[in-house]
Length: 305
Image (cartoon, rainbow, N blue to C red; front, side, top):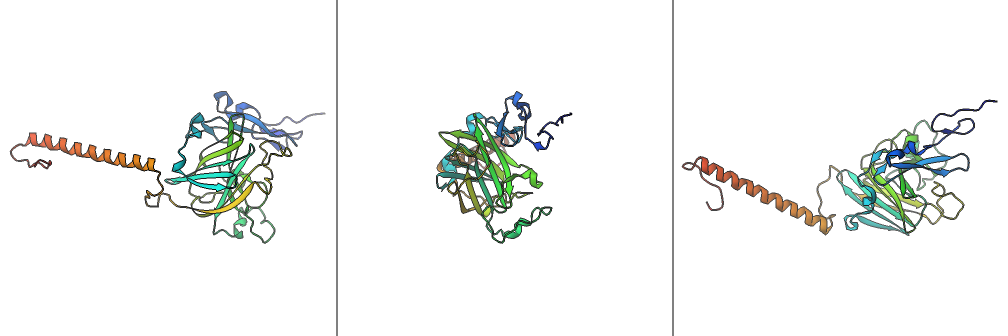
């Protein structure tokens, strides 16, 4: 009796299951960028790549903006803070990007979702190839762009997700989109999990614009022993919430100094003064050179004249 020999990434007696990695090599492990860790084995051994600090992506193939422990270093005053029950969200706008840091009291997953406040149930028509969900209510989880992160053994995994109903969120690739996080990482410390990510404001396939008036939801995983560690399963009634914010900014917005911290504002003013001094020095040097070249006809513009 023959047995199936599965292609890379497939599991099961009939190769009917797909896993995201099988060995550390699938996660750029030999380069020190990630490890392939077991997430769920209730049906088949489902593994995912968890990335070392400084790397992110489904195979830990992308270099992050922070190296190693630098990801944990930030100036809190540079962010807007929102308390979400036991969780805390920090966010700020930088050009056409938004950076967010979400910390929750769990060693399971942490997730944040958003959609335009003007969204209606008609958004569930996406994608067209799937039948629309039944029911007439418009639930908080409907049509949500999401970022979900987990951490384990000093490694982290953060993904770009979407859900159009109350089912388990799926990665953007399932809906025909791509993971377009600019940088990300997740880590555990003192019984809490923190997810930090940078994302473009612009919208895309399975991605809402991250600007304007938004409805946000947040949730983190249970730790009651029923679910396995880091499983993306039901969060329970208390580990969740919904709120509204307005994110202003982007390339088309005018510069505003009101959102800068005193430290950032001081650095900005110092840079401007330094540039003015350099410009004045250049003008004075030019003045002296021209005066030497044409002493009989040149009229100086220096302060002493």
